[in-house]
Image 1 (cartoon, one colour):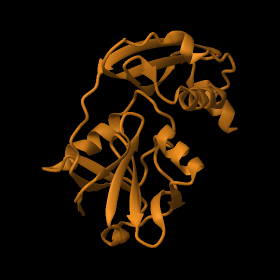
Image 2 (cartoon, helix red, strand yellow; image 1 turned 45 degrees about the vertical axis):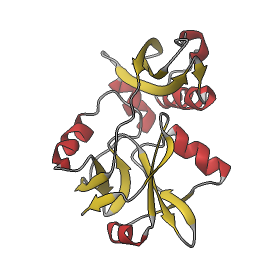
Image 3 (cartoon, one colour; image 1 turned 180 degrees about the horizontal axis):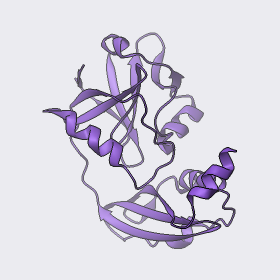
Image 4 (cartoon, rainbow, N blue to C red; image 1 turned 90 degrees about the vertical axis):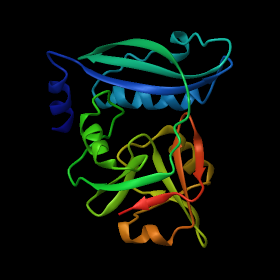
Length: 210
C-alpha cells in the first residue's frame, strides 16, 4: 500500500531530491555514501535505473565547494543536474529549540518549506534544534550529537534525515544512537553538528535555548 501511494505521487509531476557532496581541491569526499543513499531513495519510489554519480561530477581544480547534485524523479526514470557552490562554513554557536510533532523529512528533498518556516523562530540564535514528540531530532542543516561523559558521543535515534556523515560515524562506532528528550540536553558536556561539509564539528560552549 505504501509503495502504491508513493508511486502515485510521482505522476504527473515529479519529485526532486539532492545530495550535498564535499569537494576540496578536486577531491570528492565519500561519494560512495552519497551513491548509496541516492540509490536507496530511487528504490523507495520504484525507480531502478541507477546512474553512477561519479560520471556527473567534474570537480573544480582548486578551492572548497559544496557540490549540489539534484535528481528529479519522473515516475520510472530521473534526471540529474549538478552545481558547484563555493563553501564558507556557517558559524553556529547557539540553537533555539523549536517544536513540531508532525514534521517529516525522511528523504533529502529540495522542498524544505516546513524546515524553513521553523527556522524563522530561531530568534537571536544561529540555528534551530527541532524537537518532535518530545524527542530531539536535527538542526535545520545538520544531524546533531552530544557527548555523554559516561557513554561517549550519542546521536538521536530517530533524526528527521539519516545523513551520510551520521551513518558513516555510526558504522565506524564513533557514535551510538539513543532517544534524547529535551530535559536531557542540560546533562551533556559537548555538542557537535554532523553533515557532509563539516564532518563532525564540535561546538565549544554551544548554547541551547529551550
